[in-house]
Amino acid sequence: MYAHGPENNLSVSLCSRTQPLDTAEDDLAALGVCAAPLADSFEWPKSFSYVQIAVVLGTGIGIILLVVVVSAMIKRYSRS
Image (cartoon, rainbow, N blue to C red):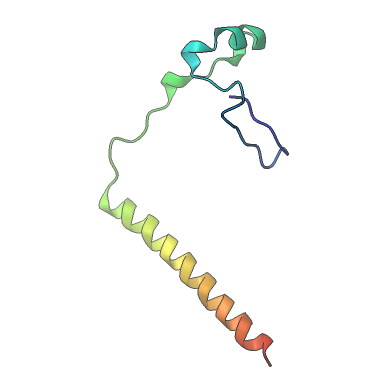
């Protein structure tokens, strides 16, 4: 994967040389032996439990509510 931009905000585009691993022989050869990712060492979970989904959704909703409440308080007290 080729990325550009500041170190803390990298991005890729369709115009970059990013391509599937099986068609990137030239790039991998230029990068050297340690350049190939360990694609077979990671597996996505087959499924998520209802508890995991509830925790993620609850956390997201809680953060949104917190932002709304804090924003309303800032707006209210800045009028004074």
